[in-house]
Every structure is written in structure tokens, then in C-alpha cells.
Amino acid sequence: MPTLYITHPACLDHLPPAGHPERPDRLRAIERALAADAYKPLVRVEAPAASLDTIALCHPMDYVTAVQEASPQQGLVQIDADTSMSPGTFEAALRGAGGAVQAVDEVMTGKATNAFVAVRPPGHHAETARPMGFCLFNNAAIAARHAQRKHGAERAAIVDFDVHHGNGSQDIFWSDASVLYSSTHQMPLYPGTGAVSESGEHDTIVNAPLRAGDGGSQFKAAFENRILPRLRDFKPDVVVISAGFDAHTRDPLANLNLVEADFAWATQKLMEIADRSAQGRVVSVLEGGYDLEGLAGSVAAHVNALMRG
Picture (cartoon, helix red, strand yellow):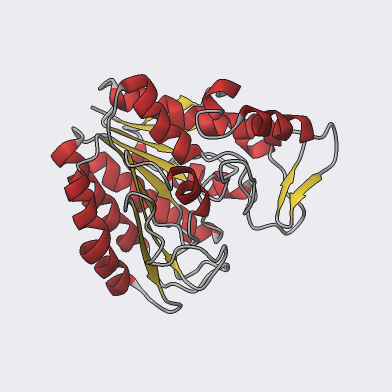
């Protein structure tokens, strides 16, 4: 079965302030990388717009409509210190969640083995009712909950290797025994969450923080010692990856030293977990990654690993 590549041109229309690192060129860099001959076997699908009810799987409807109503007709509206909306932002956010849900539908029904969803704005900092960190709606969380509600997945796992901790995903699933959230991230760093001691009401939050300057060996040790054993024991029915690539050594927003091969390795390890309990079902959703060269190469390595699955 094929690997899906899901994106949408509307995600380019989320326009940030000048000089903002989360910019449309991120998706253009990914498109160029995945235009290479090696990626011709990808099945390319345009992301549908999610319904508001789908967004409300993880966010209260009054929050969803408040974000909708904040959408400007022109110019920019500042949502928090580093999160803003342009006239195209709300549709881009709907396409982001819709692409993640479409990936779940295709993977859970056996039409695809796995999927990579290249959308923006990212999602993992969006808490239950709070936008932050460039994020409005939590795409990975919505994907996991959709797999449970529509497709009967009893246990969903979200694995987050973005360099910033996914405080939003942790917040949404803090009290939920049916979703395992695990994260490697630099600490201390924005948003300030993600300590080992933060384990959730049912011990289904697994944080494996790294220190500034850490590289592939420390990243692999965090996976091998903390995250992979917990995933094996949890036996998820689907694995959702919050695929941030800002732990790359080139990235300007943090100080880890991962390279493309490290992301490929992590992808392969997560596919092995999915093969054991989830019939190989993996849905990967783009989060961060702000150096265009590092992002493009890392996504290419990540998608190549998915295609080999």
C-alpha cells in the first residue's frame, strides 16, 4: 500500500508578520524536496477543510468559533505574543486539521499504510482552549481523537519529536488513559513544560527532555530508554507523529544537534511499534522546523523512511 502525502495550497495563505520563522516558504521547501524522482510513488492528496465539529473533538466549540470570529478581513490580528492571523489563516487551520483527519481515514481503512501531512499553521502548542506558539488548533490531537471516535481505535499514541514540548497535546490528554503522549524536546526552552515529573493522571504522559547541545546519541537514548518501552507496553492501535524538525542542528530557534539520519531512525522505530500492534498505521503531521535546508532534508529522510515501511 502507498504512503500518502497530504497538503493544500491554502496553507500558504496563512501569512505571518515580516521576519516570522513560521512562514509559507517552509511548505515550499518541502514541496521542492518531495518533487525528486524518489518520491514519485507518493500518493498526493489535497487536504479537505475540517468541519467545526471535527475541530471540537479536542477544543470547545466556543473556542473554535472565537478563533473563527477573530479572523481578519485584511491585515493581521495578533492572537498572542507570537501567534497571529491573516485573512487566509482560518482556512489554512481548517485544512491542517482536515488533512490530519483525512490521513487517519485513509490509514485506518487500509487504503494507505501511512501518511505525511504537510500543513501549517502547526498545532502541538494549542491547548484545549488556548492558542499559542504559532498554533491555533491541535492537528495531531484531533487526528488521534478522530481515530478513536470514528474508527474505534481503543488506544492512540502521539509521539512528538519537535524541539519544543507539545504542551497543548499534553494538556488535552492529561486526564485520558486511552491516549499516550510522549515527547523528546530541549529543556529548558519554550514553552517551559515537559519535565519528566509531568506524567498525567494515568501515567500516560511520557516526557524525555534533552539538554542544549545534545545530539543524535542522546536523542536515541531518550527513545530507547523511555519512549519506545512505554509504547510497546501501551500497544497503540494507531501512532500519530508530531513531526517537528527544529531539533536539527541548523535550526535557529533551539540548540539540539540532530541530523537527517536521526529523524529517519526515529521514524523507523515508530513504524516498528506500529507494526507490532497497529497494523503499521502511522499518521505524521508537520509541526516545527525553521531552517529551510534542514527542514527539507529532514522531511525527505522522514518520508523516505515512511515509504520503505
